[in-house]
Image (cartoon, rainbow, N blue to C red; front, side):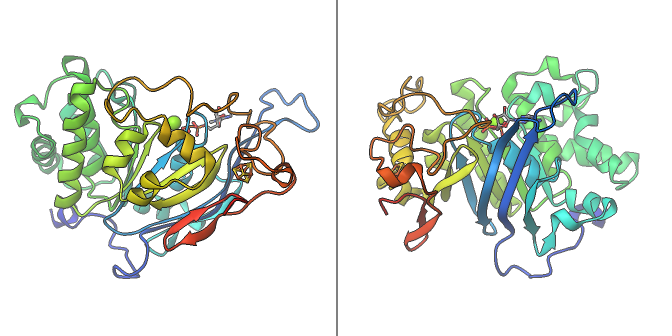
Length: 338
Ligand SMILES: Nc1ncnc2c1ncn2[C@@H]1O[C@H](COP(=O)(O)OP(=O)(O)O)[C@@H](O)[C@H]1O
Ligand code: SF4
Ligand SMILES: [Mg+2]
């Protein structure tokens, strides 16, 4: 079954040079008019111009409060939904220009793990068959091969191969997340998008799953995009971190630099709200004393999207929109203060 062990669709024109994933000017505007009642339907700006690169073997964190566009960005990268504008390139392949057939091949190279394993697993199918399912879907191997490979991947994620016939309800949340990870890895993707992979799990289980993900990254040479609203997890897990606010990246830098010296007032508020002494404890209710709630993405503020809450706002902030600018090597921020 060399088809399985080599993994992916044999792409990789740039042979290891340059970023594995490149996202440019990505926009997703949802028209909120299911019944077709409006001439000019309200538009929700879920993702509003996002650019980032992910290098091979690195983990890029995407952080921000709920509703800032993290999951929509993930779905756009995988082309589970179509963008309003922008480009996504994986290993020199233009994801958005792919035909259906090419997209199928590309799906072997990038996979996603969702927050809630139970809702992403079929309650009536054995966990072993669910891990084997992507092989069947892509026509890889015969029944026996797929059975053997699924048993192997149960062990890869730290479960016993004897659990093949169990159903998801017989497992804990952490065990089901291991099943979801095995299913995502069985096609040997290059890129794994982890969308809040530990947010639904008990605190005691989170560290185990994160450790597993680190082990798997080394073993399978994986590149991760790690999405979380929990900055204390991202800080420990990601090489670089991008902070999102209302569908835009407001700051992106090496995690070490971002957490030590956040430059954007929103990043500063997020980071000051991390309870350092008890990183796994409940989050602070207010973000570093910020005023107000996140504005609606249906009518986002003019100018800097953060100006309605920013303690440092200036007159120009409501008139002009700051763009991401490199202020130190590898450290970009979108704010007129910098
Ligand atoms: N299919 C959809 N139709 C309309 N609005 C959506 C849809 N999916 C997401 N949204 C909206 O887009 C915004 C970003 O959502 P999401 O990407 O899920 O945020 P996050 O993952 O950061 O919590 C939210 O306001 C959400 O309600
Ligand atoms: S551009 Fe102005 S409003 Fe926006 S974050 Fe910077 S100082 Fe605050
Ligand atoms: Mg989400």
